[in-house]
Length: 128
Image (cartoon, rainbow, N blue to C red; front, side, top):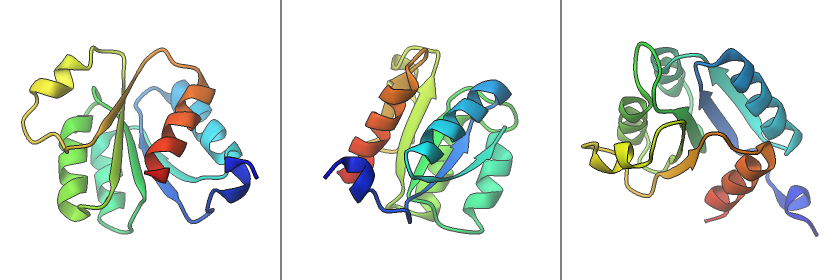
């Protein structure tokens, strides 16, 4: 049985990415893989949605307008300590390591990446 066949449809991903084109591609790839995805172009709007309903995973860019991904992740962890967090960034992961209050166990996927790599990383993170 493949991971696609056993992946629960109940796994909801909140995606925060300010690049409209990239956000559309990410949503399509994750939905094709069987995930339910809600997406926003900034951290502030994503945070508002997090306060309304629970998500299994927060997938967020680090550098965004209105609220950056690190602050969004911190607030998400405050709301739900069980939420899994993955950052996608075009910047070096060292930015994340030096940030205070970065949620522990957060994963980082550096841009550019192949959509298959993203789905594989999400699968691994949610299976853990």
